[in-house]
Image (cartoon, rainbow, N blue to C red; front, side, top):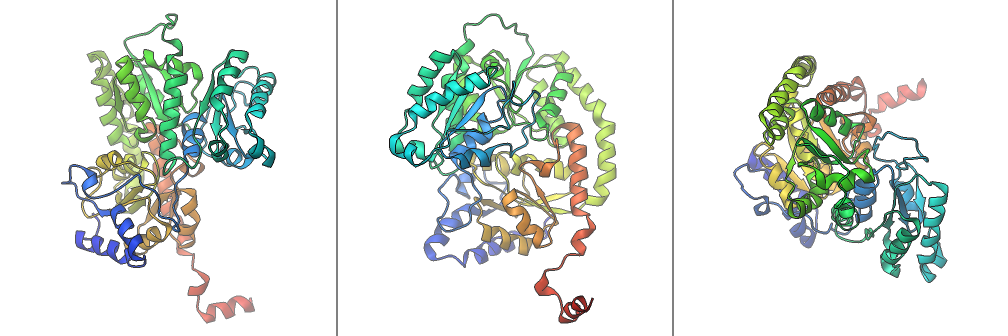
Length: 492
């Protein structure tokens, strides 16, 4: 367990806050807390989903990132136009490793950058006509696309381009779905609103398209995977387990997802939700409109995988429940071997996390399976219902931080002295230069998958490879070197 007491952790928070002016301190104190498992609702101890403090280094993204980069972008057989200047589309292209099956430029388009490339004259005169022309050109160049989304960037909301009218006209001419998404980056306080806006666009422009289609044959065991973006193949690893226990996955989105799968989702018997933060909105809508229940699951680490498989199986009949137990038993020798190999090397190691979506709480169990302890965690863009789910996963007296600033995170790390940090690319090189082992936990540091039993083996290997790499014992900041060492280096 963590060596810091509740009082020491609270004192650390107060010490870090002292650097701020009074107004900033009053704001930031609401976003930092000491975990208390006895609290029923996190809103009593931490504030979230508020605007970041101007002047501090926030690590959040924008609404456009939440829509184009997360929800819509991985839908592989649609073309996603970044409507605005070229930079946003280029920056968001192919950065998240959303693996997919297909031929890029023929029937899949996820790693391509389609942009209206706004110039000054487009800001002045508007981009509606340009956008309409782009829709026609795209369909001529890539005729196998199944539809198009228009992901609006900041200038679009400012100048008032009528992307809805262009979409309706384009859909009529091309006879394909054209989906306008009002995800201008300045909307909301983070990428979280972009998720919500994208979910609403799915609801309004996609989900009802096949309501009257009876050609799709349903079974009693039809499920969907929602909110898994197939980072490094995660959704494939999860799908394997679900199908082994006798379920039929009829839709998987958005990672390696298709428009047809999204349209068929309302025919499922159960929606399985992995990333609660990004997809709970559309899951709730389907429950209300179509009567489809939804269930969260966690496929990180054998303990949580077994819990989730049994929870999912409990929704179905006894045959599925028996198969679920067989799946767990089938992989037992495999994950026992992984734990036997890596737990002795990782036992007692302490981890601090700061990620988006579900990972600040979902991966805690996987670390614990390896004998590690998460001593601090926080979200970039969580709401309080995320923290409600987190406080039960964390030990008492551990740090929880919301939208943590660069300064706060560094100071926490200096005092807590974790053995490993799991965060994003913006923090990676800061902490590596401090000589602290680091894993990029947004896209698995170019590894993966981490979901499922196969993914757990990769996860364990990567954590061991990072923490026990001998390079960390050989690193020393230049200003810490003695004059003798400098003289010796010059002489050599």
